[in-house]
Length: 448
Ligand code: PLP
Image 1: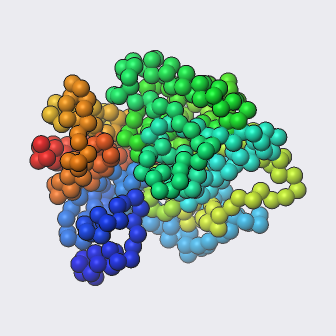
Image 2 (image 1 turned 45 degrees about the vertical axis):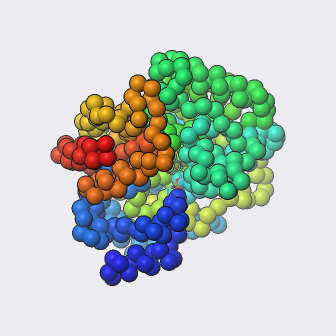
Image 3 (image 1 turned 60 degrees about the vertical axis):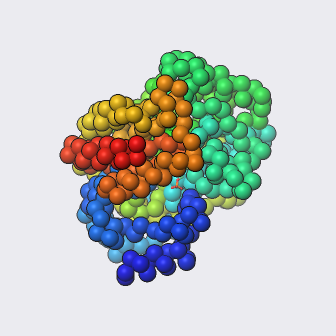
């Protein structure tokens, strides 16, 4: 079909996530047609280096034939098996066991979802159920970080602390609270790691005291805040937050939807920091975007609490496509590529090149901060480097950069506050990074 007619059909019928509907109607869609490795081609024949792995999910890169074969074989054999009524399928069972093997030792049980938002939503429901089952039904309050992103479900969008997800949606809910983000570049206390960690712990403690420990259910956080602008807390921050939660009797939930599966180097960012969460949510890199799937992993204690509290009735939480066998077969092959296929190691090997390239751009007049962990990184653009002044939003700099980058053959993410986000696939080579930074510098120069 001609691109023009696709653009018209899109404008007239398809609602896109997180766009301004009026702007989208005027601007139209860019139709992506094909992908191979780290590269995409759009319907105008334009070749693009994807520096964002789709939406921080295609960690394997595009066109991995063995994943296609795994999906095809499973579709032929058994395209669907319900997880309801005590049924199951081999790939889903094997995948649950594999995730438990890879995850922090505290996590023993897995509930599968279709993505990250319903993983977060499921985690919230499991937590409410757990505390009710334990007879602590006052524990209904949730604490998250400012700039946190925890998806777009009715409750998860309230845990998300980005104003655009609240506006006109009557969020956050009265039981959803926030503490400041550990944002080294803009921390009023400066960038000293110990001071940042102490301030976060003190803020969490104060918030729990204000609400009452017997009313706080859980604290949710991302090991690196993704959609809030790739905010990288100091090493040791996650463990300190966990210790504080344990001391206060608050469940500690790590949202690894972006950071999981090699995005920051190791399989899970929290495991590498010696953290043992009560619950963990994952999605994205689990299937590398080749099929929809997410999961909630929970500790044996949380699982047993819910099971005991359930008495003789079913636990009323479920999805038709929970533990979908095709997605599970895809995930098993994706995990094999990370481990045996060497992708995780390549991501670790390439991370210094990525970090070096970002840091080199600190010399550019627009760039105030360069930050990364593994293959998750950002540049923060400022009007005045000394004062760290943000650009006037009316300039729409981020939008202009996104458009210019696209024309120059790269896809990056332009966040509010003029932060440029990057999440290259774990299959990137040194040459891919050379091309990325060459095109990126041209892009920044063009908008100067
Ligand atoms: N949690 C985090 C940390 C995320 O970054 C996202 C999505 O970007 C989600 C949850 C929601 O996942 P999904 O978009 O698959 O629903």
